[in-house]
Image (cartoon, one colour):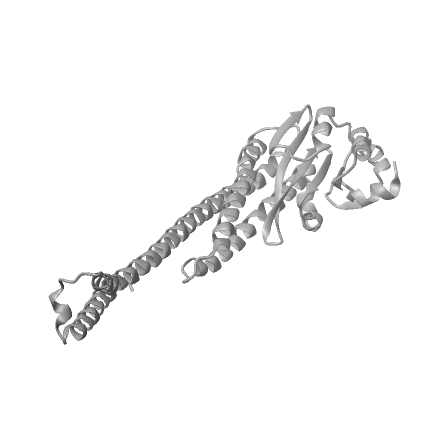
Length: 330
């Protein structure tokens, strides 16, 4: 395997002692040698690894071939699968990129003495979670199960700021919604936000089932001391789900109001056009009436006929204008 290429795909590879303290960074070839020792565990993070690197990980950690096959490519559903004394977990990640939500995946292999994370697509580095764990060796001494908690908690904690940022953007869009001029871009953005919130909900909701399993099941991997921490992450996921649900309702309401206001504005335009058409109808009617070539129209012979017709036209137009103005048709 090309060592420089492999190094660019390896975010971290470190060994930790039984007391939870970091011993040192190790090479990929040293993983199996360290696992042959009686205690400690290994924490490895990969970023979009190629097939050769995953095969190397399968050899070093003795991973199940079906789990490795799933980890080769992204676009896996959120799930948890048990392979003997190890677990394979797929979770969806999300982050804001260019004003939109970019989604990615993290594939997690966890065993009694190792944690392997494989990141695909949009995903923030787990270095902050790892540093937090290293600063609390009394917790990291619980082994890979606590490291797994730190990674899942980091992923879930990144969901809520996205919802809060979208909520702030919605407040700005509401000013445009209630503005005078309708804007097609506002409707499009509201639709895009609602679609992305649905995708985020589909990413976060399945985590509740995964965390329920981690709280209750898999004693071969998850230590009892760590289960309360997974329960706390489950509470966070529930809160995120509630926030996403509320946000989707707000977006739906904003879209409905926006479309209703667009319809109202269109009706106002039609009313004004109809009002002006009615106002112009009166002089048009009189002009067309007297424009006909009739000889037997007695008022035509009167000297005051023309001023009277003009006066009637003006009075009719003014009366219609006042009536339509009060009806707010002009």
